[in-house]
Amino acid sequence: MGRNVAIPLYVIAMVAVIVGVDFLFLRDRFWWRLATNVAIVFVFAAFYLLYLRRN
Image 1 (tube, rainbow, N blue to C red):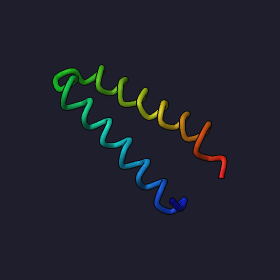
Image 2 (cartoon, one colour):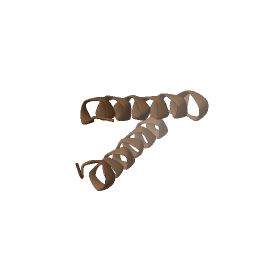
Image 3 (cartoon, rainbow, N blue to C red):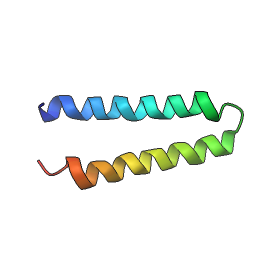
């Protein structure tokens, strides 16, 4: 899979995880949602920097 396809799929997967967690678990808790979303983005960014950027 080319890099031009992998990065948008990676971003779509991150958005899907964030939206899924928001709707399933954190609907009425604004600050928990914000903290969880930031943590998810950090995890995805760390995974990208460690494993996917090596091309």
